[in-house]
Image (cartoon, rainbow, N blue to C red; front, side, top):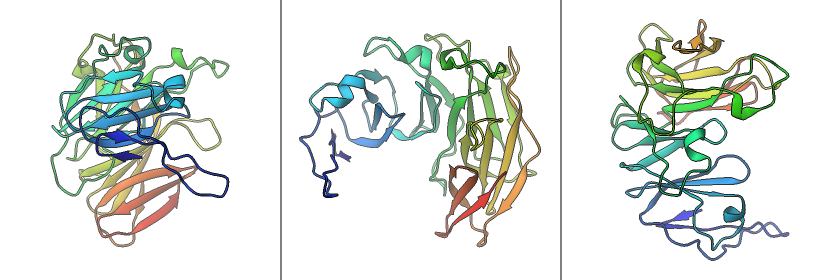
Length: 276
């Protein structure tokens, strides 16, 4: 749990109660988002002072300093789903920042600089995730080495489209990527895309990634990846399947659970639809 500048562990006792441990050493500014990135990695975004990561032994030791400091010159609003070892944050200056696996692994505590992507909408009804990343499925199904797999970043630009990038081949010193490596996709005939959720593969553990896009008119467009791209080619998405919410209000949050996509609307409705 986050409270002000502190992060507090809440161990679950045998009788079901949560008991607060002593706070971890305070961070330089207020914590704005806190979430696990895998079973042994905790990341905290702050209002004015970058993001901080505890891993492994540092996560288990409540008195330990963070393992990594992820440099960020803007307030972290929220973290989105990311490929293993990577971190994707929506920031208060209408940007998305990505700390890539190559940059985060083995770097000094103050040396992890992000890739920065601009173009997010400020304010408005969008409260949900506007960016996410995941590993692309291996061409060779016998390959289990995640470090050898490329990753994709998808961002909703709050206009009528989503933008996809392949992030492999980008060095730790890079601050951005060539725009020619991106692909813009318009899911449903120009409807404003407010939020998204990216499912790395189908709920049976295989198949292509699927992308759900929440729109301002209450619809959800779900697309399956048809090409992972490569070289200077960005990933491509197939024809969208349209799912509708019952109240027609803007979709502001999406989440995957197995083969179903859950949508929360601005009017307070939460609905679920299966996507085979």
